[in-house]
Length: 142
Image 1 (cartoon, helix red, strand yellow):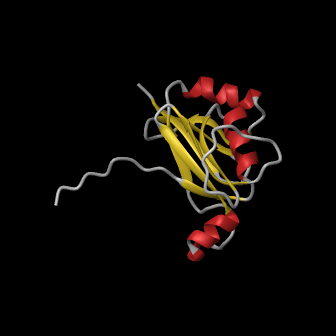
Image 2: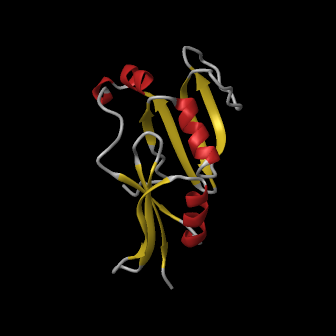
């Protein structure tokens, strides 16, 4: 029973997939991988303003994040028909955390905890995304 876990990809419930994708691309530097329009069984690779989407995936380097519209989520998994947001943080291990911090500040991303060095040897900061999710970014100090 030596089954290997390969990766973890968060799938986040959001109110507006298109707006969330724009936030992650424009503010956080992710790229679009795919979109699924509402009420369609097609995959698209270009975001169209004012079009409604049920699902999307974005990535930056080796990190992938999925977004699903709240109504589509509730239809797929009725147990998840609750509020948007979570009692967790998504913690990204990054290179050059100080440069990333400065670039997010320039993009006017809401920083909820300024950059600091922890007692456990990480330099980290936290932001809030456009849906209220808290994202942490950290780099191990040398």
